[in-house]
Length: 187
Image (cartoon, rainbow, N blue to C red; front, side, top):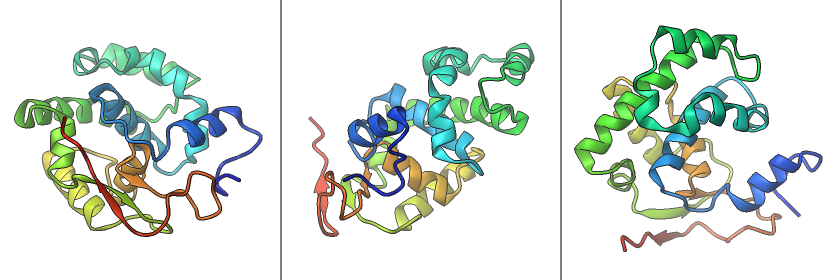
């Protein structure tokens, strides 16, 4: 049995649930991709965004940060015309702005991974939450740096998506059990 939110009729959703959600993946490209996708999810269902993920990858140059930070009005208009994406001008502009800030954080900390691990160096196992003190701190910090669409609920969902928080339900075959944490190896 899977988590109750996973639509059993959507193969993409099942694959995401079974192979990705709650599994630690701190590669820089994945961290950027999930941050952009989670920010687009604001006000929408994750399933909607997941169904458009391949189109986002194509439109956003495979989430190549060095390309995204150079996007200009012509590219913004191209993204706004792409019917396979969420065509919200504020979110599109925020995604470019957030990528620029992501890049600055990489330069400041050596990697976005190191930045995140400065807030939380353990995988947390917790259920039935939509935010916590860590998502509050990261959200406040990112907003203070100028990022948009990074409220505490979005950041909590982001931390789940990249595996820093594992929230599989007790009835799910991927449930790890109890409120515990696992130290992340830096090797």
